[in-house]
Image (tube, rainbow, N blue to C red; front, side, top):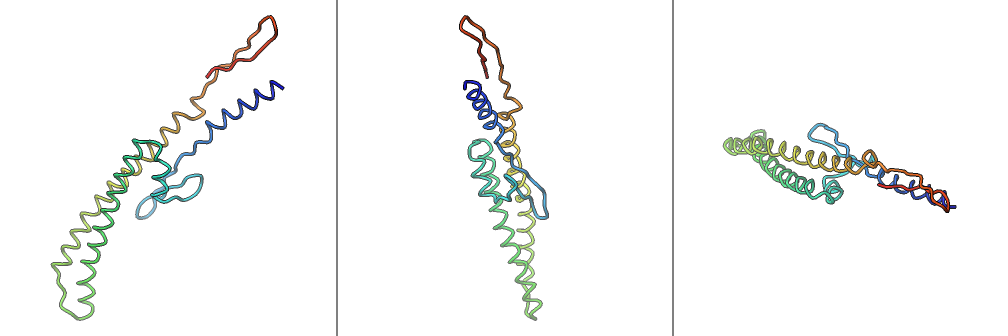
Length: 158
């Protein structure tokens, strides 16, 4: 009975250390995609998963802020470029100054988006590194056989 209990305890300990899942990152056209437990996750889900690691969570918050700013600037720039082009195609008198301002906004949005992706990827790397620090590869229990006047026993130190 004691051996069954010991085997159960050891199994539970090992599975609790192995269950930590890392987040996978893959570069795709226009950015990155993130998977967790073989499921595609959004940036919001990514933030909620990473929330337990405070340093990684700070990075992902900065990345999400930069990503939002980049999206707003890119959208506004696209609208300012598209309006004069549409006006020109429709036969009207286009305001090319507005298109130039829009192009400038798009150019400003590109490095902000790149910075956002770097921050988010740094957060994912930091989170994954923290998982590796507590994974089963660093869990090294010591087993000792103990004998005394009443019998034998097995001791596990970790």
